[in-house]
Length: 298
Image (cartoon, rainbow, N blue to C red; front, side, top):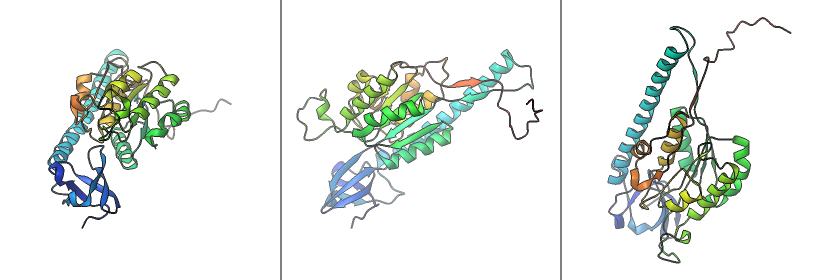
């Protein structure tokens, strides 16, 4: 018997993706991907409960790739810190003198899924990327941005949640926004953000979810978007892109090939345009004011 919170796979899809049961309504369940940004419904008769230790093949591969991507980002940050230290010591300070402080790009993350939002915020914290996140349904994102963008003034904006190509769509045309669950709302949110900041290097926008209308999101003003091949994207793919933007120097362009290699879905799931990073260094290193001895002048 299937219960709320159970981990399940769908027999009709070969059991490749693992879901968690979110809701049960009579003979159907609303299920959410544990690794992929996929929200679906399925007959209870199509669901098979699985042990957490034996997840679907695609889910297992995604977890392995996600772990590798996190390790790569962490190593990239360490390498950059070492390069900065050597450069600063060589150009500005003799050995033993004060070092620098970091100012990574600040992220504003709007997510149409509360569980994925918390996962995203956990990853930002692990990578030491300054981020504020808000659970906002996709249809409300454009309105929320009119208030949040001036208040937070981020360097990077992430707009994600759930999307998908509709089975019962008005037209069979994948160029038409009406063929998608939430792509229209992502487009509206991007347009609202570009009214606030038109410069693509001053505000880097990462937008979309599973099977989103990639071309429409880029045309609306996104720097990076999903999904070129209309595939499922990993829950944390937008976070990896935002972290890469946050931790790339403003003197450098974010390497798109690096972004694609750092995501689970790769070039099938995400793409984008050349964009400058938003990471800065400052001098000298910030002092611990609790230990600073100061003679008052007033």
